[in-house]
Length: 275
Image (cartoon, rainbow, N blue to C red; front, side, top):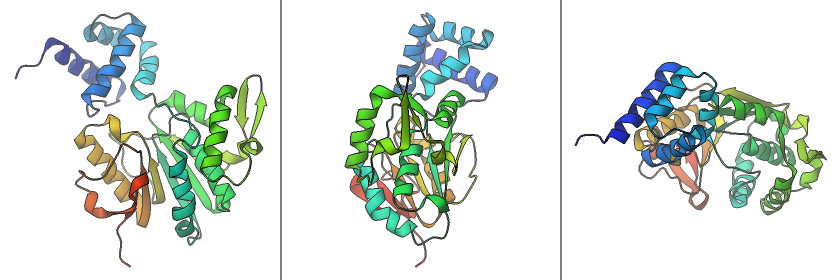
């Protein structure tokens, strides 16, 4: 079936972005990419994807902002508190058996999940033996993550999530409030590395004991989902853990047999390994 003009324009725009800026969004779900680029077209006053492509190719100031539309992730500290409670109650006892730990938060956005895990690991006595990698393809988001500054009006939700996750202290112990913002303690970042990494094109970079990649795979098509899950499988140590978002699953992945359900309701899986 012949492509519609709009679909053809969209394909050409994604090819242009890959060729000019080396970001590959061709494996993202069509519905998701159309929705995100539709918002971008409104923002830049473009009637068509071709007009947006012209702006992207000839105005260097456009792409950094466009990247925000393509990679935006709405998150919060301890989002889906039950997930973090299961990490705390079920996964942490296993992690405590290791002398040193590495954790990978893939698609970390502005860092909310990284700080959530840093706080959780501190409360569980694992901070000093743990290195946390927070990766994303959006450089501006990584800068925000490194700064650890969030709007103060988000703190009541963060605080309630932390409490529901089984938090063992007050969230206020970890930030300072000033000028309408909450600045999280720099000590939470002392064993954290934020870096650029693409699930689309980059390779495994470390062996880790826990991968948390939540609400990222839902934006990928099946082929790209399989690639990402393959990366997680190859990154995880024997009996390592993988946490996905509530609407994500390994059920249809060709790598599903490499994992067993650990807490299926919370989409936490364990890599198979020899006893």
